Image (cartoon, rainbow, N blue to C red; front, top):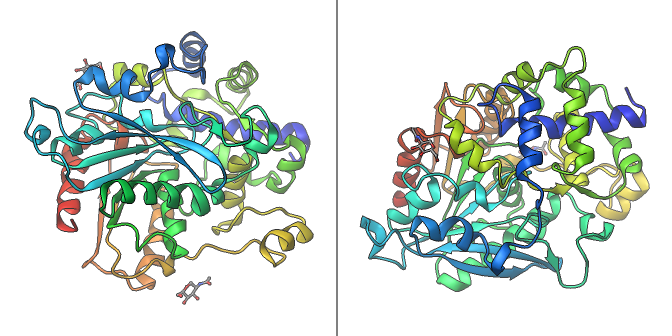
Length: 422
Ligand SMILES: *[C@@H]1O[C@H](CO)[C@@H](O)[C@H](O)[C@H]1NC(C)=O
Ligand SMILES: *[C@@H]1O[C@H](CO)[C@@H](O)[C@H](O)[C@H]1NC(C)=O
């Protein structure tokens, strides 16, 4: 490996695992690929009838919902959905003006992550029904957030960013918007890359004054314990070459090029797609397969190639740094030093309330990697007074957002945590 072709395969393999993670309740990847093709003709087309996620996903459940728009420092125009109070027929329905909570999805997903499940089992609705004012973020480049003040989403410049830019621009700007609109500091809840962006921003002192707390579901900071066949494939590849070979571009996991290669990949000797799903994302404990079918109509969503290269770098390096341009000159240009600067999780301000929930079967946020993060936090002085850690030995990556039992194992505790630091 190391050739351009090998590198492409690695990127696609990474993508595959993440996509597969959405489908782990299904038996074979080929089936999944077919389903995507069927459902996903209009991956990022504007919604029919001019509605947004509110009209599509929230209103049918009978919850109030507002569409909002934030223009971030980089000129990206992001959509946000707000569920200001609970269902009119349920306990939280009458209150309103509760404490704001911002929900941040992970990579290759969008805000629909939180909105598609049944109201009793999905965190957004559970929080609204408990009297919280729920705000749902949508990352740049995903279905509802593809506009920019001057760039077109078909241009390479639009895609010239990695998740570092979400740390610097989008996340703080979205938090500011919610804070301004509600006159309260929001709580933050992230899943997967949504936790990474928060941890990185907190470690740089960017947002701890603007947030009340952070809840991190399947927290990702280190990735070095992914020891699956796919992980080895990644480790043997030069992540640094990726960007020059593939260029700065959109990575759209549902484009025909990608789905074709994904189904080809599953025929590779040594990469059995069924094992692949189980080995890599872990065995999810309580996914509802018919609910996952609904999710697959809307996910996965695009991201930038550079974000995926950055993940590959994190996996290989074993430490969390900013995006590595590989060329010392280009790093100096961007960072004033030849190596990309490290994010240091020990610097997350002590006393800032954190809730971390992780799963023993999660092969993306591997428990060994989460333990490294926890060690950093404790080294930095975090203690049980403000840091709540929950370990669920049967949970894998997707149980935290789509699991029908997450309400009992996770969300109940999230609600108590939020109430404690309200
Ligand atoms: C599974 O999902 C389907 C469709 O969304 C729903 O009708 C059913 O009640 C769900 N089952 C459980 C156990 O939540
Ligand atoms: C991270 O920050 C802590 C606390 O400021 C410091 O003691 C430690 O040396 C830093 N680690 C690295 C690798 O820079």
